Length: 222
Length: 232
Figure: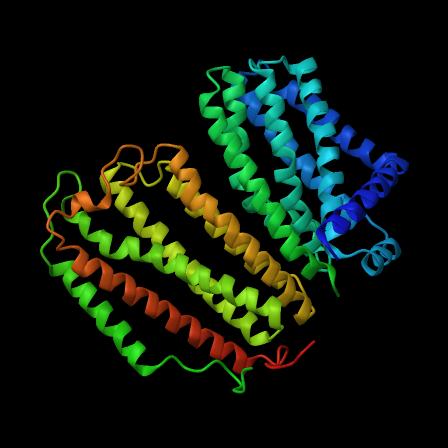
């Protein structure tokens, strides 16, 4: 199949997947509640909260909620639905769809987490534009790696335990970049250095997307 | 493709070369003449032991990734076993590299662990490949295990590259050649050390290849789960 047809197919599937997610709204609601509970517990424990601790806690919570959200989109699927997709959808289209749906969800969740933390723990970010850019580029980094990892751990004997064991080390390069870039947003200094990190993040995103296109079909066939 | 039951043994010439080069590098490493440097003093000899571990580890992991790609393309269990063997030896080299590095760091930088970007990157690298072993152990079906492990291995290798080569350059490091520190060649004014260092790298790499070969042969001969040459 030529690439444009592949992408068109992925877009159709994206609409389908987004509709499925909104119909099963309790799933996304579960992730949102995860954040509410997490931020509420943190603001009880971390008081007063310094800017560096704010940022560290933000990324830790985002990391945990992304593992929870992405793994649910695979492991929470019913066996029948999963088989149906396997038979009817080519791996590459499914990969692009999952990355897009996951990224959309993570944008929502990351924004929501920032709002919650702003409400309960103050808002130390000085350069909000740069922080939004970090979220924009950071979400696909988390989603690409975790989608591949959840697809990998699906047939294993303990999928839920494998997710963090495989995912965290793979996410370290991305998390380091995300943290550096958002630290610049926190301090609100000159944006010169920010472009280096943003460029590295775009590069890492593209590499992971390409790796997924090459590797996902192998995870998909059975 | 492979008509034999197990991987072929390493050629005797390569085995001999590995022993010869390692004996030479140990002998010259302990007794040879080295430049006198402030702070480094005699610990500069660790260059012959610490740095070849990293070269060896990277080459082993590269080989492991190549075998994993081969497994994905041809579905031969032999390739999966080779990939596992090479990543195991890579892990051993990685742990030895970290250990020799920590000892060196204690004597020159003043602490066992200073959170240097390269120290962190190599620790994460070890976690990546330990996770590979965990992944392998959590599949019951041999074909599933081999397929998932191969995909993970390729992904892990591609995540290791930005970790080891790109991120340390974005921050200051205590290692030579980073953050305004003089490069390795500055310690090596007359090129004497190169005559020991490069043979040591080649020797350790050959030794690692030999170890992985032995492990893969042993593994193929003792497992009944994964018969070589079986097509799924």
